Length: 126
Ligand SMILES: [Zn+2]
Image (cartoon, rainbow, N blue to C red):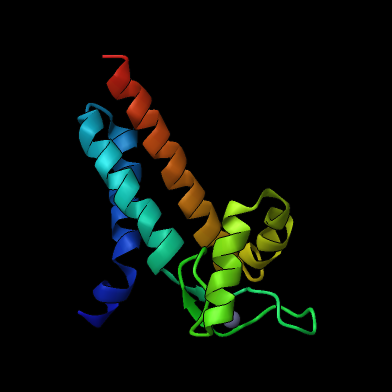
């Protein structure tokens, strides 16, 4: 079950896609699933750190999620700061697409957020 502990977000993502595809699923359930999936991809999924090192290269140590840094406290702080400071977005953005895997993690995270917004709107319009 080690695989499941690391990659459970992929399962919730698949369930989410199927739920939208099939339709008729309660928006509250869609919203919950979307949020859980978004949290997974932004904060839990195995990914590279992607913070900028002192020499300008990108850190390739293992990290959790598209928005979290590796075990270096400075990198965690750097990514967190970049998320909340608009002019840091371009630098953060570089780290989000380092490899296809990081790109997929970022895309899946963004898709989950979009899905959460769509579900919230559906809920509000009822
Ligand atoms: Zn790092």
